[in-house]
Length: 240
Image (tube, rainbow, N blue to C red; front, side, top):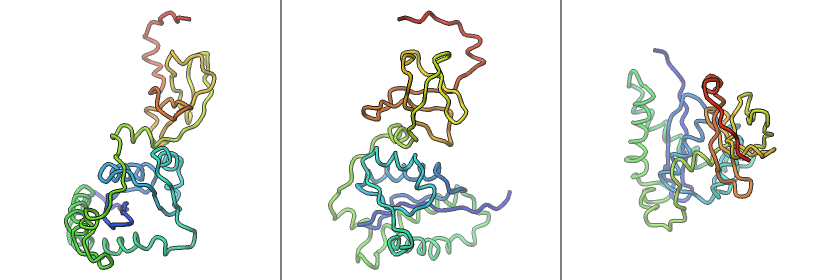
């Protein structure tokens, strides 16, 4: 019932100029950035390098650690060097000049319909139109050129990669740790550990992961302590 300012997020391939993914959000933060980047990876595969500007969301630990764990090299643009981001800025000019011009008379323009229209425009217009610098369409250049992308893991693995990894001290009195003021219960088989490594997303503390320090793999999921349920449960005898 009220107007909101939507912000567009897009991932472009540097060689082919193809739009890997573009989506509108009502906020500009790390949560939306991770969500949009995962969509691009699922569509086009894992790249060898990621170039981005120095925005606060791009500097978040969930992005930096997640990209490195996927074997992607991070190459941020230089400060005060807007020419390094010229290809992306040219794409935004096309979005404003063509896409938004077609939608300016649509009332009301909802986020769902905006994203559906943007996806259709990117896949059936921008990626299939002759690029002025390439001389061919981005889709043709992608099909004709060499494929250096790697196979993308499934969605659950991607979600496990884009987390913030930190160390925590286990409280042996009740087998819990604290993450951002929330108590998480450590599985009983890890009760002898004094220090554990956990991976979590700061915007979603409904679940976290125990991380193996040797290979950064997830060894268990952990959840916040449910005090009401614990009060009604019987305790089993702990084995040695």
